[in-house]
Length: 323
Image (cartoon, rainbow, N blue to C red; front, side):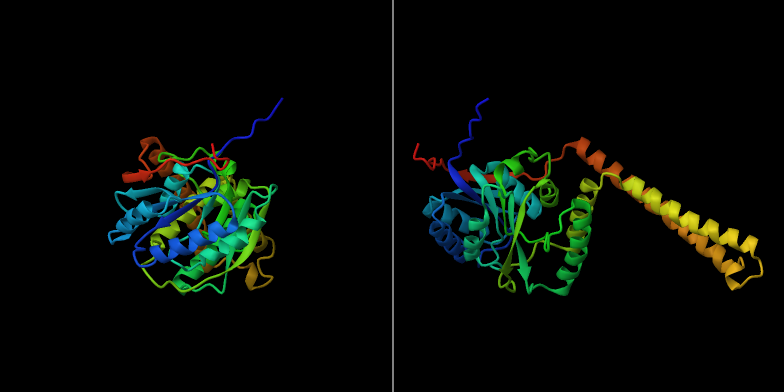
């Protein structure tokens, strides 16, 4: 059987989600375009305005008019979140592979020249990780906790799951057939990747704009990843509950067999109170898990879109072979 390779107009689609980036977008675009041209690879650039109410969209339109490498610009009705903005870019991407990078200049766009050479034929993902991260403790601490959780649930021992600067093999991303009614998850894709290469990247304090991530959004993102990647959550909860129950049962049995052996052998009001508290928490954990999955199933059945596009501009691309 002959395998016919798929043809794409360009080698890389660079997808950028923007939120209040009117002051950084022009410098970012100039530096990114220069770096991609230096790489010698064919590329397109896709900007998504994630509900910014400043002049980000006006800047996008001006850049689109001037630079033929900017093939698509997308404007959302409101702020739907970085994941949805990236998803919209994925849906419109016509490159063989996809690069993600933030436009707030916390990453150096020039570092794309570090990632591209590592993206060989046997590599599925090249991802950066932030050295000496320049964010607030409010952002860093939840990120560290999330990294621990994501390593467990994905089976990938990466240093920094939250680093946006990544190159994905396009076929890997497109295999999930994500779209407005089917959200995607970076961690879920990483869990299916075979070979991942990590590259250390410089990280700078945010100079302009504001982050779209609030504590509530971070919590929701982590819960989404846990729900998607934990195939046996109720088994884990049952196991934890069973272990706690076994410990309490052994404790009571010990008090019956050796009633006067020591203080440990006495059934006290404190012991009974602890047993009730542990049992109550275990029941609440199970009920919360059931409720979480029930709500998610309800939302999926509702088929609400992950984002709605208010306006989009797109131009045709010439294939990298000139046809």
